[in-house]
Image (tube, rainbow, N blue to C red; front, top):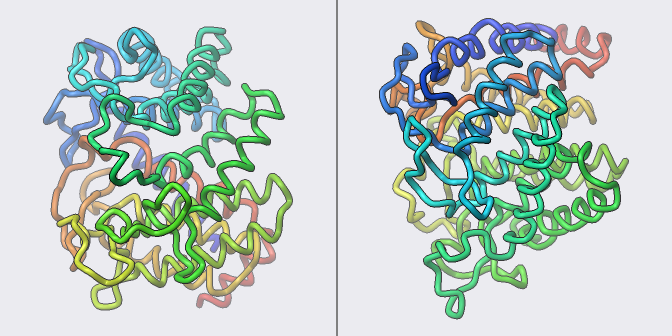
Length: 397
């Protein structure tokens, strides 16, 4: 695995981050452009808040966790200034998107903008301890907690009296956000939130009969026989399980880690395309056709989250199965998503692993999942004792 460590670190620092540093900065209006072609040219100037906030987090995290490079802190400050000025409405909710000058385009219907704003400013505050940044992170976090039972509020299209489903996305993100915000929150608040989100993820959304986590459930945690109620998102499960593993480490809870490991293996085996390789985007738990027409696409973030998850499992347990899955995922991911000619990675493949869109960034893909995935793998492999790494090197050959 030592060879993987060097490969992932080099890719992060010499390929992926320079791509965003050189191409995404809007020098005229502030903030970042995320709609970038294969070679890094801007093809659309709209600015999506959750990608702006994720890029703020990414450059802040690199500065805080890898090396205190001035270019990284400057890039983070550039994004923070734009977000402070333009990101929120009069109620403090974060818009979904803005035009290039910072004028709002889409109302704050999506609470995930708020989640990544809290995450981004919490990390940036470690660089720049200006009180305003801590207040933004905390007020946004408190707003998330107020809205979590009805995340879309007045923007929701659902008639809840008929079908009132709970979605997995928010408790999943709160698993991670609770740790990202820990340095700004009182310990009892963090501890209570952690217990709550662990219960949501591992009891409410987890279904014992399948060993999988559902994307949507009834309010009491029971399954709902509908398109939404049968939906499985293997990538979300893999991402959530490495969040849970980190919480298990914090709590020194081996039973929680063991359960997360079991769910991770089950979901990966369930979601793996046995004909063409790679992980499916969406599946129906009963084997019916999913409503998402893109169900069989292979997406960048799904595979990167799986790589992080398998690396963490191996680092903690030494299970050969995790090492084998990591290698299988590694070979598929680097063969199909990495661009051999230009920096950064492709995001969208068809079922056969062929490139669907040659973009490097857009409305959904930005400076986050590729670099965060690379960073997390590097940090995880770094924790594996050298003796274990050398032993694995001999085994793999």
